[in-house]
Length: 193
Image 1 (cartoon, rainbow, N blue to C red):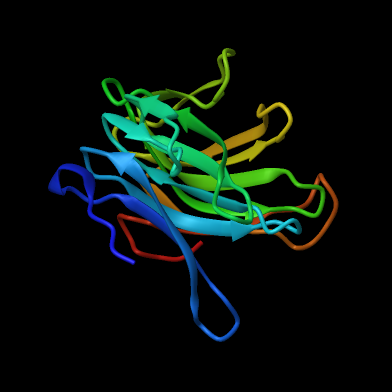
Image 2: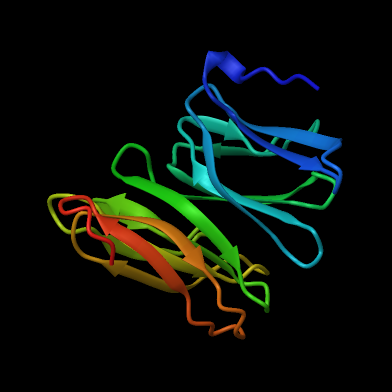
């Protein structure tokens, strides 16, 4: 099963193999800029959630339809167990800020948790509302974002000042108000915190 990136840049792919490692399906998302999926999670219904970054315009419907996200930095997408498009959301504005989602996790209730880093001021509400965070100057801050799924709305948003990059967010299996644990490092000292 071959895929070719659009415009010669990198695109996002999600593939499914069976327990023996045999190919089931593969799906492609993205556009003409560099697009990267940096984390993946699966819920109890076998739906597939991915997050990462993209530039320009990206088509996040891997099927025959089109669902473009435009001029942002961060995406969160959901495909069903067969790899069909369910929804995709964007955070950020590529012209004024940078936000990279590096990790995604789901809790027992189905809330989506993402973490990553950002600079400048970013609107973390993927809907029509506004939920701005401003990073410390200079440098980037880390964020932890908790989203409801129906509708997709920010429920909790945290940021921590300093030159930090958040790499993972893990759920401890607790209910909706779960205590997330995250690991991150300080780009200045490389010390884990």
